[in-house]
Length: 449
Ligand code: ADP
Ligand code: ASP
Ligand code: MG
Image (cartoon, rainbow, N blue to C red):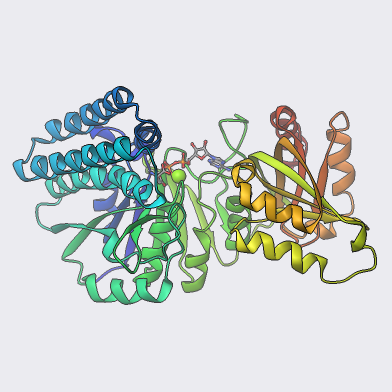
């Protein structure tokens, strides 16, 4: 048998029949064994809206949205030739969706468990149809629809469950045939907890699922197929001069993903690192372009490789006069973050205060804010973006700070952090400043190189 390849196709690569067919051709040409797919583009957003409308009792809006999802999926299925078995299965998913909506409308309550179950339908529908598309292209293979929930075992932290690596490996080893005879089509984004409840890995989680599958089967290559031709020096939607990066180290890619490069879910790189699996990122719309390879080490290591942005950030400052000359305060503070599972992106400290950046959504967590108030006085400022320079040996580049500050000398930088790793330099700016800041920095630090 040749190399064991896990390939993931994102929402736009599942967007219509032509996109599904292009994706299937890639699976065939690369001899991928596991094809992990996202929901068709826009479907997860629609399911979220349905969940919200249903729990507020707004049935007419739900019906409109369900109609849209139905039209889209039945439309693609019809074009494939409409296998009766697949049609029956698809109908059963819509029955499941209707039932969920009826329950939520009745109870007017959206439980995290119901939310995850509802969202899982997007990937379950797309993979069902994609299986037929792949089977038509590969009549000589045994093309199997694999329920990812039987492999991707997680805890019960609905909304953003934590995968149980050892269990995943055990299930993958037991259930996946490595002979090359079988091609598996499966869902990204979803898993199940130890009680069998459906869970999700968080928005954009299909990349992470694919990496977990790759780790579970000790794959030779993990491929992420999306709508851009690889990882670029910044989001090409923001800077049209952004260039595809041919090779990236795991550390650089992980920092880029962590600090907002949407092309990779932040957790994608860790499973690949654990098994030393090279990751390829390319466009399913232009499969022959060279794309990006992410590996342990790379030859070219520029000091500034890329610029990323995390939008919707808030700065929380916790102040306590008793912090002066005292110990234990940081422990107390971060224990609150840990208990509420709030991740900390950037931290700076002064004599009596600590400033931390968090995602805006964290501010909706009233019990977290209440617990923080027990530690000190808190001040919250919203409306920021975290801009990060990602590169190599950033802590050793004497002229870097000067170049940054002279390039954006008209912008107020609210906070910055450098030094925890040599791979990133983060600074917080007002949301409205972030795009021009990135454009200017890209020009000065990347295009000019
Ligand atoms: P998929 O549905 O295939 O997972 P996503 O929309 O999640 O696709 O991710 C792809 C998008 O990521 C691109 O369309 C692009 O706008 C965005 N993106 C952000 N930063 C980068 C970057 N540095 N390089 C390439 N794409 C990026
Ligand atoms: N469909 C999910 C989402 O939209 C997962 C993914 O696309 O990666 O978040
Ligand atoms: Mg994505």
